[in-house]
Length: 351
Ligand SMILES: [Zn+2]
Image 1 (cartoon, rainbow, N blue to C red):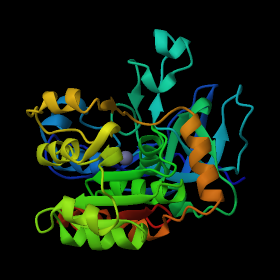
Image 2: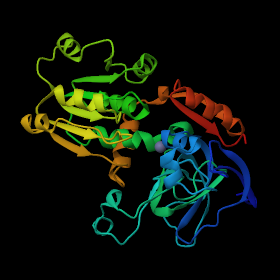
Image 3: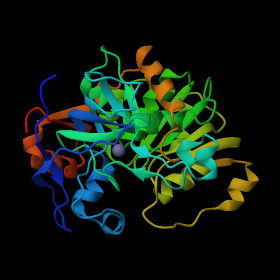
Image 4: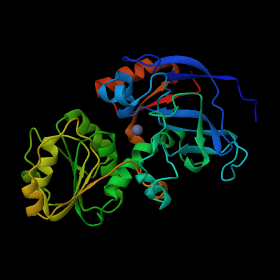
């Protein structure tokens, strides 16, 4: 192992306004139960774009000076004195939610429901850096065959897997609303996991066309131009959808979903509305629908399922549309702002 440098380059929110700042900082110090990861690839998330643009949510939740970024892969560069499960040189990614050990849920092993959770790259120093510290508990070893850039998109893929598998979808008809990266990957997961028909809706033709490269069996519907009932008849559905995955956070999408569900159907909600909106609860009651909120992913059951799905043929490589040297981060953020990209990867060997 080569000696570690004293400093590293990283992207920070040096100022409370739109932008990202390239800085030189000391390497993170690791605690006895922590691992130092040499970051190889990162992906840019919608959350990073909120932080980059410094919108109201970011201003209220993210400290200035923070190194942001939470979708990454890399190699273990150093381990603390009590670390046993991983060793220097291992290829890894990590769960971005760092949990406490005090709450009822954490004590019961429901780590993903711990209210004391802190987020890597949101509350804690993140992955847009050459090096990052992470508790051993959060480290996910990756097998040699998995490309580093796929390792960098397992965080959003985990959201997609957790949402898609929150209800039994084998042989079921599935409606997904919102063709963002997680909605698109949820379609690919639903196909792989044995859904009968998968329909993905959005109002953006570019996004739907891109989605068909990742989830080729899924029927894409621009609900601004096509009626969902017509599409359902066309693909041989004469009742409603059994499972709904709401990924848009948009009022019309959710109300349309309720309208097109089978009686007794199940809805998983991952999309976060920008503000509260009215919902026809009479329909939810009358149709005996179950609506479940989904947050993050299960620690660590979702990771096992996701890595197993990837091992057995789930292919999300087409999700990645652009790759930049990390030093060209500004071009990457500019591209993300256009909305015309899938996952955008930064290579931290080129900073
Ligand atoms: Zn993310």
